Length: 385
Image (cartoon, rainbow, N blue to C red; front, side, top):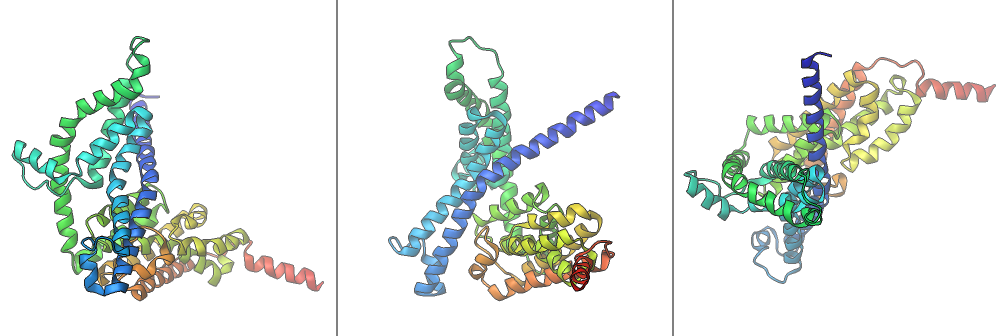
């Protein structure tokens, strides 16, 4: 094995481990996202029911009203989801000693007042919006690696019991606080503010392009890292009250299982009998926004399936963004579609993407030797005999 092979292998291993750390953070964050997004959406829905559209504008000032309580619960979930992301990325790297530094560093760089003051110190303006989930990703990785490095130091036996609960967390915070606040937090917050401004002002071809990209990413690896990047991007924007990308992502994530199941039903001769059974479970999975329902199809025939689902999801996501469809809930699929500003158009985008995926997959796939159609025919012949 050459030196370049060794280096490439080490690099691949490191990239894989980073992906795993990020996915750990995302998996712990999702329950906070789900609780926060759904309760906030229910608060807005109840506010609209009680006082019309105008009532939603004062929901956070209506102390004591039922919709106010729901909104407070939702806001708490969405506020803590970003520090939780950073905390559990650090936890995945350094175990318990990394948890508190990861949480605190990620929380601190969400505070606009702190970053604005830090920006004034270093001569940069515009960090008052907070660093968002991008900042939390970097802070969590930094906290985890620094905590793990300290954890691996040899110390006297009498100090060892204090390492995980006192020395490692405190030293990690002391080392990283100035770096995370001044070097990472302020620039990321400025970039985050620019991105938010761009997304708020999107229209026409810009919205189509962003929707198509998010949609394609949601379908490409059917629940893998690329899918999660698009999902976390949309979820992070919920805290900025930008709901269009979440609708595009949800619609795009529902399409792959539904589209492949539809193709399987209308052209059973192109699929095995086992895949026909999988189609029956892919329908509820797709409706529930579980993109992984398409994995059996993608694993068995990636060269035909992946282009089919990417095309359908890209069209669905682009149509959603172009039509200005919103979704304040981060998960739920068909169970939360009524929370959209245009429920009918939401379902229409899902249907259009599903049909496109089914059509392309059916055209690309050739007949299979042993299919559900042939199996049913053989069974019928044996019965008649």
